[in-house]
Structures are given as C-alpha cells and as structure tokens.
Length: 317
Length: 188
Image (cartoon, rainbow over all chains, first blue to last red):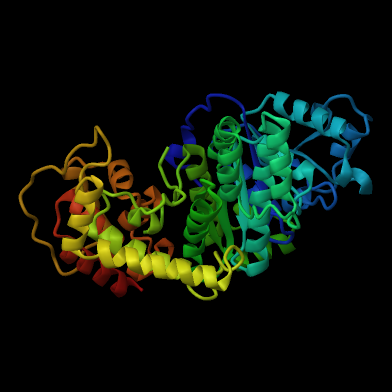
C-alpha cells in the first residue's frame, strides 16, 4: 500500500519517547495493539523498538509473525548478556525491531527492583525514536512503574464490565503509586497508604477524596500531589468495539475519570472487532501487513497519527 | 495539544456538572445533558463500578437540575450574570480567527463532505480551529469531510457535530446538517 504524504514525511520527534500499552486485564488485545501501533509508527518513518514486558505470558513475537527469538529480555535480566541491544531482534518491517519477552523465565514476571531499574535504564538508552512497551496484565508494581515512566501511556479496554473495572483499578493503582513516590512528608505518605488500603477506615475512596483530605491536613503536600495528578494523563483506546454505541464508551470513561477520579484522561481512539484481525492471527501474521485495507488497520493508522500529534477524540458532546 | 479533558466538578458550578465551560453553546448544553444522563444511566458501563446506585441517582438529579437552568435561555442568562460568567459562544481562544463574513450559501438538499470542505477552505477556516472551538475531535471532522460514515458517531451526535461545523464556516447549521444526513442515509 502506498504511503500517504503525512506518512512519507514524518515530523521529527523532539526526543526519544517511551510509549506503553497497559490495561489491567488479560486477553483484551494489548499485544496486538502494541504490535500494530509499533508497525504503523515504523511505517511513518520512526525507528521503533517494541519491548515485550509481559514477562509471564510474552507473545509479541507471535503477533509479528516471528518464531521465538534466540535471545530475549530474560537473557538480559539474568545477565547472560550485558546490553539490552544484544537481545534486539529485527522484524520483517523496516524500522521495527523487537525485544522479546519470551523465554524460560517463569519467575521473570516478578523481577526484582534492581533488575527493573537496569531494564528501565537500558530501555531509555536505546538509540531509537520510540520504545513501545507491551505491559502484561495486572497491576503489579513492575507494570505500573513501566506505565508511569512512559511519555505516552496507553490504557486499553474493551467494552465489557470486567475490563472497565480493571481499567479503573489500573488507573487508581498507578496514580496512587505516583503520588506516594512524590509525597514530600512521611505523614503525606501515610495518607496515600491509607487510600491504597480498601479496608482503611479513612473513608478515602478516590484520588479526589485523597487530595481533599491532604488539603485539610497538609496544604503544601496537597499542592505537590496535585501536580502529580495533573501530569498523569492516560490515553484510552477502546478495543474490540462491535457497534457505534461502543465508540461513546471511551468518551464516557474520560468523563468519569475527570469527574470522579480527578484524572485528566483522554480518548485516543477505538478499534473495531474485525475478522481480518482474527484471520491474520490464525496465520501468525500481523493484520496491518496481512489486511491493510481492513477497518481495524485503518483505525490503527488513525489512532497512531493522533497519538503522534497528541490529539484525541474530543469530549464526545 | 488539543484539549479533551473533563475536569472534576467545581462545587456549585452547574456548567461543571455537565462537564462544560461557561461559554458553551446552546447545542453543546443539549449534547452534554444527553451525554451526562447516559453516563449516569442505570447499567452504565462507565460508572457502575465507580458509583453506588444511590450516588448515580444523585448525579442524574444534579444533571437534570443543571439542565433546567442552562437549557433555559432566560434562566441561564440570570445565572451567568449572577456568577460573572461570559455569555455563550464568546471566543474560546484568545487568537482564534472569527467566523469570516461571507455571502450566504444556497444549501442543496444533499450535501457531501467534499462540499463542506470546499466551503470551509473558501472561507479560510482550518479544521484545527473548528476542533479547538467546538472540542470535536479533529479526526471526526476529517471523517465528516471524507464521508467516512462507518467511522462517525451515532446520528444524534453527528448532527450536533455538523451543526457546530456549519456554524463556524458560515452555513445555516440546521439545513447543512439535514443535507449531510440525507447524503449519509443515501450512502448507507
């Protein structure tokens, strides 16, 4: 398929960026989303490395139609190689490379803090335009920290109750972790801890409640935490939508986050359920290459362009 | 970066209850009201796990109360004056170009995205300006101009988008929206 003008003339990124795709729940298409957005970024002229950080269930290589790579992130974590560059694998798409998470490391899902810092430092040092991290399911500290270190934090949901519940849980967990790290005093940290504990008698149910309580007790700490909340801007992608009513769910999630969690989320875009995707997965091919005219592929192109430009789908009303 | 956030409500601010800024147009108030009722509706996917049923009911009541004032031109004017809010439709961006004066356009019964784009370009209005003023996502505006009906929202939202678009390029909002919707129906 021919490149459009905007694809052929990519605006230069001002600096290396880290993007991540999280979502809390498994089986909602995070890996396919990461693979296809990475593919499109590469097609737009970016040098991209996809990192499969779903260490307990890595399959990004399969999404890209690759066999299990010889070297994976596990080799780096276990110090069998010294540099993350040594585990970077080429893909069929020019400009798109992969750090696979596949390997023999069942315990890798629980990598230790120092190992995580080493991975983060080397990921930041990769000589590329965009590092795109596919996070695993759940809200473990490792996953939240990768999400929080990202310049572009994508939160994938599907229009189903369990996915949306987990999405909110993911947002609250990530935000509280960020606030806790930024809490300037021990008493402020204790208050954040109280918010983290659902059985706490503090009565704090949301970040909005937490900020209000902090304002009463420590106005200066509240100001510091408010800055953290303002800087936390997850971008929703609603995946697997089946009818036009599902499109509105992204707008509603953004509104609910703003009005009831105090979080300035945005709606980056949506991707329809598409049999072309499923058929490509069965063939172990990426639908962006296998079915470039499919509706899902077009939506990924739109979504990626919007993410590059920092645009969203507006408020929905 | 395009603004697309929904701020936490300011206490006692009827606009914030609907997720609006005080400059919101009448059409935006209507759309925000319908949107908010859906957001807090029974079984709403987006709020059922955040709010207890009684809290959701409370939110619906607040939404209705806000709309009773903001949806009524006279009551809204009194409320705005009492709170020092600017009148509806006042400019959002300090340097936004005003809608250019131009002769009225005869709108045919059926209007396509290409026609809309021609009028917009002839009047020197950028899509980015429309997106910034109306807060409609830039891509939805592109979809409208490309007649990509599958990517556009439900008719109730689309009609509102079209009216906002038409208003900013100097077309009669209602007639332009009707004409575009006629084309959409014809293509489906």
